[in-house]
Amino acid sequence: MTRSTPSRSPAAPALSALLAVPALLALTASAGCSTATEPAPRPSAVRNTAPAPAPSASASGTPTDAAWVQLMTPMNEKAVALLTLAADRATEPRVRAFATRLRSDQEAELGRLRPLLTRMGLPRTDVHAGHAMPGMVTGSDLAAAKAAEGAAFDRLFLTRIRDHLRHSAQVSRSEITAGARVDAKRLAAALVTAREAALTELEALPGATRALG
Image 1 (cartoon, one colour):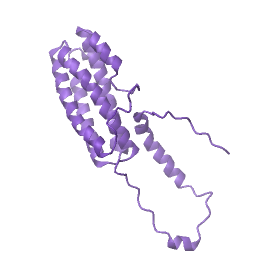
Image 2 (cartoon, one colour):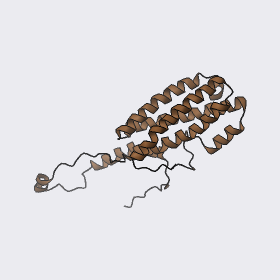
Image 3 (cartoon, rainbow, N blue to C red):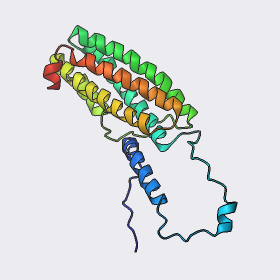
């Protein structure tokens, strides 16, 4: 019986990879445990076969590690562009101060994400260019922010940056759970802690209740 394989886009989003890798690994392990169609090995083969070595991540990490860092880097870069606008144009002083602090924090994270890309042998290019990734600040978002003024700008900024913080925390939790590289998992944990603190601060900002519903 021929099994059909679902078609897959050559530019599959890294977020899908982050969420799918644990399920795929579980499926592979389950299939590997089945011996119903395999003949029993001869005794000599059992005696002469050494135990298989435990699997380990390559120098570039697992697909989860690569997916995470290749997603988080452009997510931060796009967020920094919006934060730069907000630090200058937000109406509420507390919102401007929040944007300024968060921009510095996200730039510092980029100072760790970009070297991680290099250590993993991954390209510095944005592999998600042109894709509408959840939580990613888009070119349309930036254009709308540049056109908005006053309270309308503040509402747009608060909504988009909250999405960024929530989704980047989500994929970072997936990296902590399913990743293999110690340096990537450590950075992901730091990002989750930072996102949770930023979300708490954001929700207390003037206008946040109206903007975020």
